[in-house]
Image 1: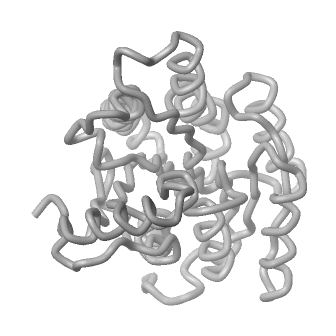
Image 2 (image 1 turned 45 degrees about the vertical axis):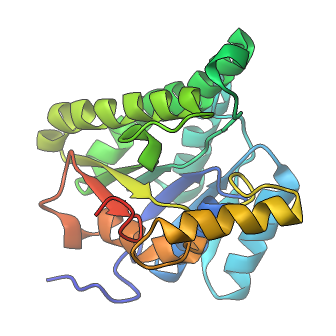
Image 3 (image 1 turned 30 degrees about the vertical axis):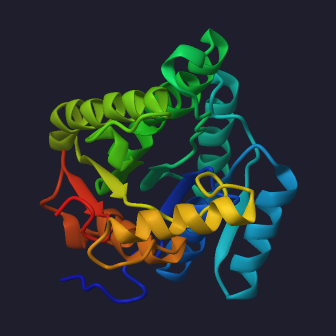
Length: 256
């Protein structure tokens, strides 16, 4: 019988895309603390190496695989390196994403292509690429990091919301196809989280944004990336063995 303790992922291999900052960095560190051997992936080699160093300093095990998961070559290299270095794959966290905020009238085709490549094609095709190893694990878990906008579209980031909604839909489809083969698939849906991707750069605009988002949650504040770690460890571990094809909301009560 497993428990929710700090070492519930001992000896498991976890890939985290977009793992060099924000939510992805927090999940890399948290999964390693739970015992997983973590593959930290993002486009920046230096940033990935910094996360690996942080994990190693805390006694964890991790490697850096800097690739662009929006490309077939990047996805193939990521899976091959994980298997070569750690012998298999047990957990895949599809976290990499781009935002590119625009009103619909201003969205350019190349921007929409970029959002689709990273936010949809990457998790779908990376999951398919990793699937044989997740199946071989016998306890495979795919966690797709979604967004509240997938369930309630937000003006100004329509492309991002629409593509996340497509990922939620495909999450259920993958679960229907793969769960009986030993691979569970779920999505983790954060509310507003204090990351560079969503926070305005201007200090005054940032303060107003945080105040507005905080007022819309029952908790009265936005989340820190590290507050998503427990949910990710739960979805990756045997504690969620009966959960598949579902969305786990960590939104501070925004949708209550």
